Length: 241
Image (cartoon, rainbow, N blue to C red; front, side, top):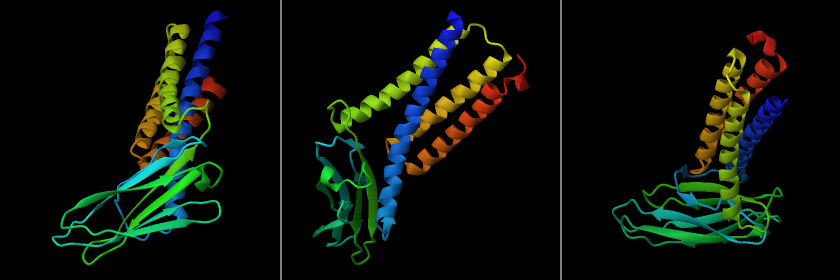
């Protein structure tokens, strides 16, 4: 009974870690997709926009974008920041004068007054075309969370490392409690490790905000989770003892 209780506890801790990884990467994915659909995408992608991952309801954050003149002559593009707001989108525009091959970083401040959908601040930065300088656009979503009076960065780092540590801890407890593995347990363990690895890959893909990879890894993780549930939990007899 003690070994069973420990193995069950380890399995639940492991599952909690994987679900936390999925939740965190899924939250980043939600923000990125909402940011790209909130305003029309009229420029080429590739404008590097940097945003906080998380803000607390009481803090403001800084958004930045690097604007580069790739021409061999002076350029004066218009840069517009489109930021969400509960009472409608706001647009902040400015005209830059950049010498040939100059890069300038612009900054904007966002705060909880710009929350929509209850939890998100959405930002789109558009650099208009100028002469042969093509238009560029970038977007990001910022999640707003309240957690033990921590600031946004502390919340994100806490959830990030807690999810990974919990997953590893749960796996270690389960393996230690279960003892020598039979064929069913070995197969389930291998599938679970693959699932955890893919979930962690999705979480790591959230750091550079690669939303396409997040979507792919999270989708595969959910498929493997469903397979483990049906093949090893609900119908373990198919694999023998």
